Length: 410
Image 1: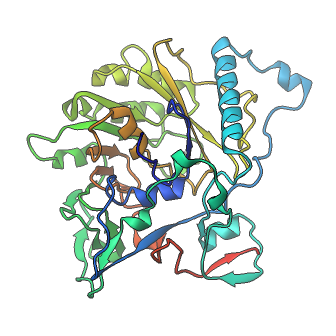
Image 2: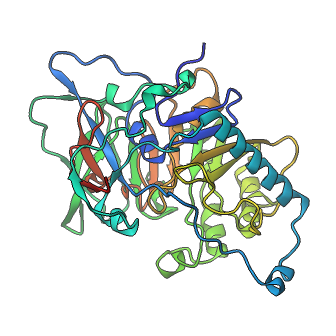
């Protein structure tokens, strides 16, 4: 019998090719070791922290598809790869709907004030505890029930020690060597910027790439899994991002010495957008994968859905599938989830653990262009503390209920 999934995995089929994931809870659980913790002792009390999120999307985004016959006529024809991918996504969503039923496709969330305003949430009454409103006790999916993060978090009842201090004015490396979370006080140019809590056995390299990688010890560690979420150029990013064009990104990715950091038979995973130029940059002959000495073996398709399981945009719309054809030997998997705040991706530590195979529990990974930290991992980039700051979190009780005044429409 296979071990139970962690509770941020709301559903996974037996072949592990279709997964429904809860984004905020995946990050919450990634703050702690992947293996179950020991039971609390008399002088320890379980404690959780909840990640502040946004209002779950209730309906799909308005359609941006062309309406006039002239505009439709000017669209390029879909090729066979577009049609096959479209059909694959449709079948995957149909399978997920049949298996998961009419439940909400995300867990209850702690909603921040700014996100609440953006979501257009009505204010009727103040509510202190955010509980599970879906009644998951009647869920007949035994293989998805798992160890909740609340069971694994332990803190001493004695007053916590003063936080360590970290200055991020210049590129820096900092580790939490302990098996418990570590509070640190962050400053920049002698001005305090807040506090952050680092997961157990995590290491951060804060600063711009590729310069920050020069802080790695010599010889450098080797990782069985390296994950990248590059800041691909787009209209909104161009107003403030350092890498404004595709050539800029090509230069940056080419400068990363990942071949020196990857373990034998290790994996590199890269988040890609739907723009053909980016896929070509990574996968074409002579592209980034060739430079890193790796080849594509799997393609994971990330599908954003509403809380009721509808795709946020039209599956049959005229969006273009990113460029190059994927060979028959490449395995596909689908991951679905309700979108979280902007630029926040699900934590895939558990899914990568399944990919790596038996005996890889507690593996050490590296995330480049990270926006938060993962227990036991190395996180690299100038936004590595973005969602790690304590202002992004609220305290909860032993059951995971948030000790936080949250406005909800009741």
